[in-house]
Image 1 (tube, rainbow, N blue to C red):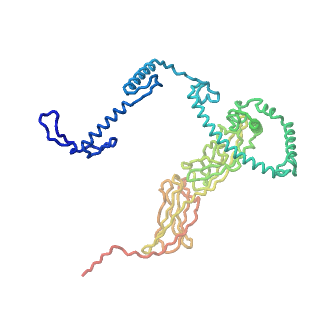
Image 2: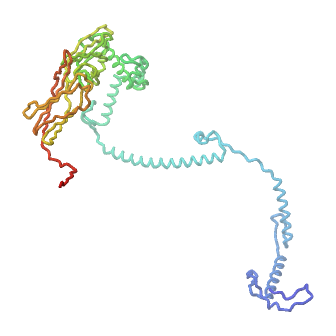
Image 3: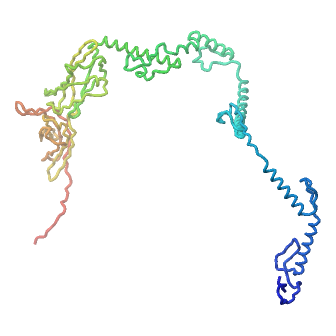
Length: 506
């Protein structure tokens, strides 16, 4: 809206009619005012609204009898009355004294005291606890309802099955029936079982009587075992320390009986065993220079006998050439079961390890209980099965001359009395070559060599084991001749020499 004059200035403005000035503000729907209306219309509508408000205010009638007042016809009196009442109300509220809250404690039911954590609880917590327990019970009842429903179906099935059962029955397995044969009614079968149980009880005693006898008459748990070291509990792993059933009692009784029988057997062995009860046999196995002695199957040495300290038991080995070696033979009892051997190192002996042996075991055992001493000599042969080495042969033929190459392990590397002889025979088994080595202890391994100057053809190579003697003068004795091995000397194709250089001489 544009001004056209001022009441504060002496100089008048140009006169413009209010009908020529338009309202540029927003629409005001509640008084019907729109943007673009003339100022004349705007002022007129505002004036009408003010007059209407005055008229409405003059016509007010308010009845406040419910608050202790009367009827008022203007707003000022009504507002004043309400203000006065509010002040009175504030005064009343300020004078109110609020008592301390009442604490309601309840005794908790016995079945809920574990969940409550005590015997008392306040009402609110008690109510919450009851609500929780109710929910749990509701879930449990639902589960039980399902179970009952399932059981009901099962009971119906059982009843239907029972209704189809026969009136009489035969034994389930006739091979184990002790109450009779054939078929009978259930009542008859039950009556027979009752009678048999009563008869059985009359023989064995009542359950109470059996239970009373379960407790050992004498507790042997910590008593020494008779036939083994330790107590009954430590010597026998199956011993029942705590006896609570008839089976436990019978178990311990059997162990006690066996322990007693074992002692009786030992006493019998102790008092009755003689030198004739010692039955020993031996055999030997030679591996290189180690002789292993085993007990023969069936050898018997009663446990009451122990080896004498003096005289000691010995073993004497004699070869074919009458050389001997003697060693102490300890713990003969340790090899009687055949699971182990006693080993003797013959490498430093004078024995010819390529020859067979005669072995003598001189033993002495004593029985400390009866003061019995048993001495005997057991002699047995040992055939030397490892005296021949394994020979490897190869041949060659070059420039009109044949050779045989041999190689074999030195199986007596520690022997100063053993030699090897290599013999070569032609196809007619005529000896064409013979070579004797030094003693084995001076040879390396393998033993290798060549037989040269041979023609084409078949040959046989033989290894002999010799025993070397020096008295009264040096000489060798053949102790073993090993099987001959065949080898052929064949012609091979010529190989051109390389490189070859040619020269032309003019």
